[in-house]
Length: 386
Length: 168
Image (tube, rainbow over all chains, first blue to last red; front, side, top):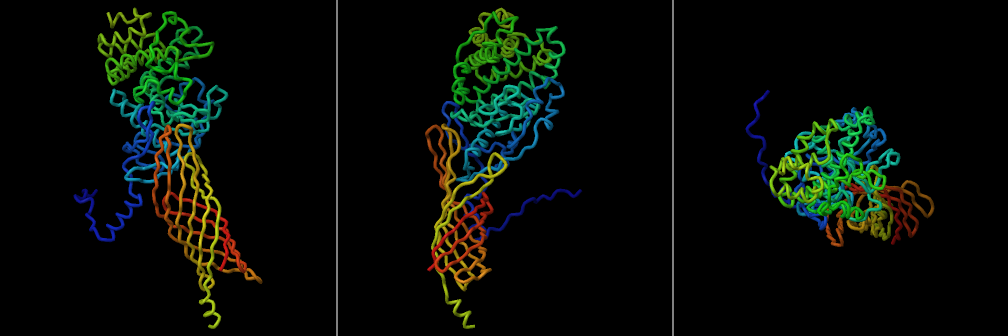
């Protein structure tokens, strides 16, 4: 092996021809941009803004340090709907996620900024920026491991079997757990802030990913597999699984609101969700939900937001009092501490909230914030908030 | 020699219009997105086969998005092409041949992005090289042609254009 040369780049002589060429390139916008134009700002007041590329090294394909965007993907939802531990840790991703391609964006450089020339390019650049910012925030509040790795995002994929399992193939976004990927579906009815351009929606889906790799310790399918084997003999397993699904939605709404800077971020894209998904609305945990499945159903349909919205409201209230970074940090630490209980489906009502308060040092402010939402079940908090 | 001198002295002028479609790779799917385009052009012919053209072409890229956020675009190309128009078949009163042309293209792209009723407009020039090829037929006063063309290297576009011109 030869020792590295101390001189890696030679200074090129500047000739009038080279200077003229460089000037022409700058005028014509052929230079490499250092920023991208996205739809940013808070979800309630979105504006066009120019942000740093955030590790987005391939603008044409929208691939960078934090995410790789793919299009025309075929996703087999039906095969992914079985409870089988072999689906954990994205082991079967290659089977479930079929043919896919890289996007081919259209943009031009204006004053060092990559300016999208069509809607899809604007959506892709924006979703990348929101992904990068979310993963950066997660890292800042203590997340680690696979939850921070670059994520695949399937933009406008073809969902096979979505109708069979009651999932929409438009107007929605998902964290596709068996593929460890985010799915952004095309707008049809939705005409408000597009989902890929809503920082809260992108953060919400990535928060599901955080929960999977942290609280579930990447064993969600294995845990659900146990319900298939023993659930009817041990119904508390079922209750715990429903509870974790509700907590998952509540935590994702909370973290989405923090990233979006808007507690009503869901409603900015999905107007009919504004009432029951606004995390700043005071809600109450009902004592009657304990020991039953009542907290997880509305009108006979599974409704993870019933309990989830209360948890999101409690976290938001605490964050407003203590600081959202502190609460998010406590939330990640609580997920890590409770992972063994989640994997064993032993997690019970209010366990997560109590652990968050404990991680916050049981400060009076934290106790007061959770007391507002959890007054009916406050005896659960006596251990940390005497 | 006499014939050659007579041909070199001949210079044909032509003005016309064209219409067709410009095609670019689709952003978010396999395949392409098409946009209607039209142009007016002037052309000069020398020596029977040398041909120069100047085009002003307008391409409407349309609007896509949703009510709250949408992006629309249009482009004007100022294009100069030079090359040969090779006659292949001569029949009484008409000549059928093929054009092979290449030249620079200055494109002005206007992009309009609307976010919640606030609109951002950008007008940006870019330079490309265009190559065009296709059959033509000349009649005593008229010339018709069909062109396939490609712009390279940046933001590559393909196109198919039908042309009709009056010769003087």
